Every structure is written in structure tokens, then in C-alpha cells.
Image (cartoon, rainbow, N blue to C red):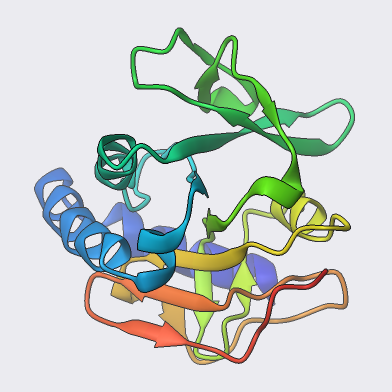
Length: 192
């Protein structure tokens, strides 16, 4: 079921033209930075976008302008874990990390207890805040860490919102979902 849903969502995303991705990413990020939770956050964790994902770099630019600490994931594929590291700008000695995703070469490790807001990527979300990732489980393991109390927020194109996502015990939902068309809030409090 998860494999078929991943294939279906990828097909929808790959059908989008680059100009459409850019304009709709802008719309989603405008809604994201308007959230009270984003405005109040001191340390914001964003993902480094890959092809056909909502490009959240404009939200990072706003966060830097507001003197927020911007964090991005650093994946250790061999250990099967992900950490949050500081990112001071797009020219911050970025290197190609695991899975070819950019990350700062010298990002400073950040404690999960000190993260206020996390933008959690996924291929699909449902209207209860459940998410379907790419299958490696890095975000689910990261979000399950003791002491993490950050607000979690999905960021997606409207085509990525489906009726239901298959859920297992280890899957972590988001509290908010922002798309290029709407903002959805769920009763999924941070797990501490």
C-alpha cells in the first residue's frame, strides 16, 4: 500500500513544470511564515529541498532576516540517524550529503530540546496529519527523540494531500500541514 501511494504521488509531482513548482512553493512558504508558531520560534528546522518538493528556502531567508537559528538535517546513513545542524546561509560551505541532499560542511550540532519548529517533509499527508515519507524512517526516528517538544509542520503541494496514509506505531504525525492552498491544524501535540 505504501509503495503504491509513493509511486502515485511521485507521478503527480513529476508532472509539475519547474515554473509551477516555483510559484506554488512561494505560495506555500508565504503561508508557512505567516504561522504564529513560525513567528514565535527562535530555532527553526527546515529541510533542504530535492527535485519536485516544495522549495522552502524562501522561508529560510525570512528566518535569517528575523535572526532565527536555521537548522537543517544531517543524515548519517551508516548509523541510520539524522541530526540537526546549523545553517547560516546558502553559501555556508554546502556539500552533498547522504542521498545527494545538500548540508553544511561545518554545521554546528543542535540539541533537539532547543528546536522550536520543525518543517517535516513527506511524499504524502492525510487530513489527520499522518505522513508518508520516502521510506528510510529518518524523520520518524528523529521526531521520536526524548525531549523534543517542537511544533511539527508538514509542507506540501495540494496534490500531496490524500484521504488516508497507512500508519504504523513508529510513524509520527505533524501538528500542522501547510500547502499552497490551505493550512490544516491537527490535535497531534508534540511528544516529549
